[in-house]
Length: 249
Image (tube, rainbow, N blue to C red; front, side, top):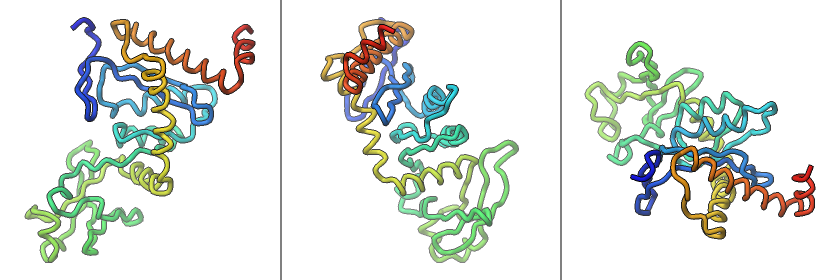
């Protein structure tokens, strides 16, 4: 109640706290924090694209890959980040309830790009049917073979047969899933990169909460802390004398 900009943040396996959601981007080579943001939105889902833009909008784009946790999974953002020339590595999040209900999941249907069709677990081809409505981002795929399919009870309860939806982000998501399979150690690398600064700030330096109130002031406070972190990191890399000389210049 003392800070109108702060929000109730739900923490995984922890009691909720009132505060801000801090976003950071950490450089792999030197472990320096190259971008940050303070937001009142507890959900990370809408922050992937804005944070990537912070590091690619300069004169020279040196960013080639971005690794993030599943909280940043957003098909639209994955596609837009790909358009910026950046490859994403984010764990795929399956929001379908089919698998939990004991039925075939969309993941078990293979998309045939050359035919623009899906192949179901029984080998039947679901062809592109029609758009949901004008301007819709989704396309329908279905097959009349559902009527005679002996695996139908394990697939759908729909009287018209199984329908698969595809939106304009799915191709980018599928490319990302393939990258995740080819590079299974990406998430371990992410934990070592982006979580380490928080551990240093909170546990080693005792900076467990913000002292100021209001988003603008908190943003400045966080910026000073990250600047101090980067300065100390640079001293470890280049030596204290080299950093002092650079600062004096």
